[in-house]
Every structure is written in C-alpha cells, then in structure tokens.
Length: 221
Ligand SMILES: CC(C)(COP(=O)(O)OP(=O)(O)OC[C@H]1O[C@@H](n2cnc3c(N)ncnc32)[C@H](O)[C@@H]1OP(=O)(O)O)[C@@H](O)C(=O)NCCC(=O)NCCS
Image (cartoon, rainbow, N blue to C red):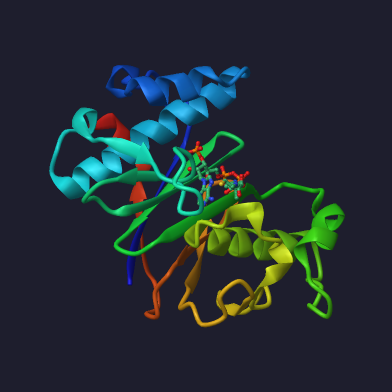
C-alpha cells in the first residue's frame, strides 16, 4: 500500500504564502500563543493543501479542507479533503509531517532528543509487555503506537497500552490492536530530520513509503 510522507523543518523556511489559508485554518493558527506553534500550524495547513492539491490536480488555495471526527462527527481531528487522499498530520519541535494514502493513515513524530521517556513508560507499556532497553526504544515504541491510534482516529481516547507493537529493533508491525483485534494495520518506521517517526495505514498490504521533500513542495506554492 502506497503512503506518501512529506516532512518540512520550519527553521530557515522563510516566508510562506499564508494568504492561501482559509478562515478556519487562520483562526486555528491564531489560537496559538507561541509564535513557533502558530508557525507549525500555518506550515501544516499549507502542506496539507499542497499534498491534497497535488493529488487532485487543483491549486492549493482552492482545496476544501474540513475536519470530521470519526468518533463524534465534530469539526476536529485529522484534516479531510473530499475526493482527495486520506491525511494525517504531526508536528513537533520545528518539524511538520503530513502523510497521505488511499486508506486511513496515521503519522507520528517525536523529537529524537526527547529525554523524558522513562517517565512515560508507565502509560506506554501494558502488563507483561517487554520494556525497551533505552529511551530510543521507548520513543520508537511511542511513535509506532501513536501512529496506529491516529490511523484508527481513536487517538489518545484509547490507552497506548491497548496497542502492542513489535520490539524497537524489529521491523515495525502491530502485534495486537486491543480496540479491534481483526483490523488490518500496516506499520512502518519513517526516517525524519531530527525526529523519530512512524506511519500506519489501515491496510492488509505492506507499506510502500514514499518520502517527498516538503520544502520543495511549499516553494512551489
Ligand atoms: C492527536 C493526538 C494523538 C495527539 O498527538 P500529538 O502527538 O500530541 O500531536 P501531533 O502533532 O502528533 O498530532 C496532532 C494532529 O493530529 C491530528 N488529530 C487530532 N485528533 C486526531 C484523531 N483522533 N485521530 C487522528 N488524528 C488526529 C490533527 O491533525 C492534529 O493536528 P492539527 O490539529 O494541527 O491538524 C491526541 O491529541 C488525540 O488523541 N487527540 C484527539 C482526542 C479525541 O479524539 N478526542 C475525542 C473527540 S470526540
């Protein structure tokens, strides 16, 4: 199953065409107090428009982006573009990542230098689940699980312990998905600049991850 992963670091990006954003995206961005968080939101919205517009063959400025929570139908959750690819967004520490696929997709990224991982082991690992040897292993386990929960749309309404994934040094795979054990979920690790990433797609085929240069995509807007 093909999945596109587009990453961009906001540092050094220069000015971006904010005028392409719709009023809802602009209001979301303006809701952030810290300038760097606003910037991440703006860049994520532009990247979503660029990725969906590219697939649909239309200009990014006319892409109609909605939010439709699969749980409650409310206007929140992952961005959704009617007729376009299914999308997922993650942002952290100056990095924006957008994943797009033909089936429900989830992407997660965490800074590679995140050092509080032993503190989160308690909420990450279920009873009897092998404990990764170090912070890097915990981080890898974290992003794999969050990618899965974002692909299903459940997000953190479900405990991370409800999902089990393969050991950090083994190829990425879902070992058990508590909320719906029969659901086919393909998982892959993603190499990102300065971050650890994973992408999941609700598919029974292995993932063919294509990485695209987000900076070049934004430059073309
Ligand atoms: C999304 C979530 C897992 C957090 O991820 P995080 O590591 O803190 O942040 P990330 O940057 O990786 O991801 C945030 C993005 O996930 C997406 N997202 C939010 N909720 C999502 C969900 N339920 N499923 C998939 N993606 C979701 C959004 O695109 C969001 O970014 P945006 O709002 O700027 O577009 C967590 O905040 C969450 O579960 N939120 C939803 C809770 C929920 O569903 N509540 C019930 C509503 S009825």
